[in-house]
Image (cartoon, rainbow, N blue to C red; front, top):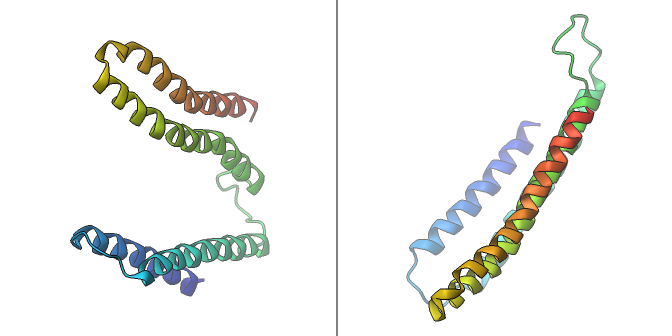
Length: 145
C-alpha cells in the first residue's frame, strides 16, 4: 500500500513541478512532450487513486469486527456521507464551469455599457444558484440519514 501512496505523491509532485516550470518559463513555444507528460501524470494519479481505493476497501473488508464499541460509524454510514457530499461538490464544479463564460461576457458588456451592470448580476446569480441547489440537496439528504 505504501508504494501506491508514494506513486501518487510522485505524480502530484511531477504535475506541480510542470506547472511551476510552465509558470516561470518565458512565453514561447512549448515542448511537445510537456502536454503528454502532464496528461500522463494525471493518468497515473487517477489509476493510483483507483487502486488505493480498491486496496483500501479490501483491507477494510478483511478486518474482523472490533470487540470494542468504537465510534459506531459503519462502512455504510461512511459511504452515505460521501454520497451526501457529492451533490455539493458536483454542483460547485458545475457552477464554476457556468460562471467562467458568464463572468467573462458580463465584464465585456459592462466595459461597453456600464448601465447593463444590473442585468449581468442576474445572470451571475443564476449561475451561482446551481451551487446553492447542490447545497440544499445535501442538507436534505443529511436530514434523511
